[in-house]
Length: 378
Image (cartoon, rainbow, N blue to C red):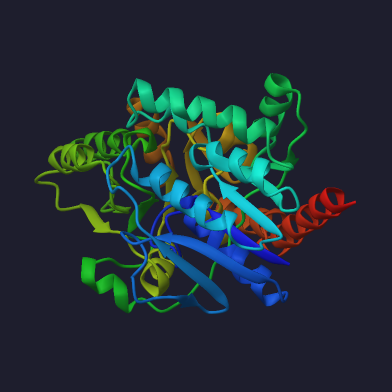
């Protein structure tokens, strides 16, 4: 099959769950012998990179502002795709998927697929107009494509209840490489099991400010037992929020911002962390959360239903979303119970590898393509 992916910023992934999702799926589809094309933004993927392993990259411009970057690039990609002979056009996320209606009308022999990753209109970075557009995108994503994929049962049930359409539920996955190597940690003066880790884009709905506040309170009470807090990630059109959380952490040498990390550096940061914290107020199915489980890390997460779907009491503790005091209590409990944290981490690893393998997920998505294409052409 000739397959195009539209809506992601680009690959290889530097940050962002959608980008990591697309990278992992497209690599496996290409290995299966499919011809795979990924539309990439010039402000994300280096302009001189036209191929990533077996995947062909199509560079198109975008209007690089917070509100227009994604939709402008998606529009250019959609127009370009109209003149190609793709078998499958696969849109990512509800914003970009709002334009999937165009090839649905004009490319009658092409199967149109959309993946619903997250209810993005709940994210606090958007103004009222952007949220309205995203809700329109939700309608299109749920109703118009030949197949809609939801990354969680929660989203699948929501689509069925609201739009009376049966989505195919295929979760996100994880692909991890635990290591004993630790040379990258010296850059931040870190040692094994000496730090609490959080990984994700620095956007308000990710809740990093709650984590910083909770950790500061523990430091003030001398309850951290020497643990540090390591925050991995960058903002994306969220400079005000990044400044806010760095101001919140100012003067705290044990709160470390590493910026966006990938490859072996991120591998080592995950591998040697004491535990992982996921403080988000809104998620789809967090890739960072699944990867932390795959690395064998016990989890502290906000109690939003998307996190709870992936976790259970054997591998995690939950805190009330948005409640820094409750998060503080869970942190001090983990800090004081290393044997329990180790045991939870081992069970988390077992659960992750049993349920969230990218190889299985790629097989499921390939089956969706075949079914949609066969139905389209019969």
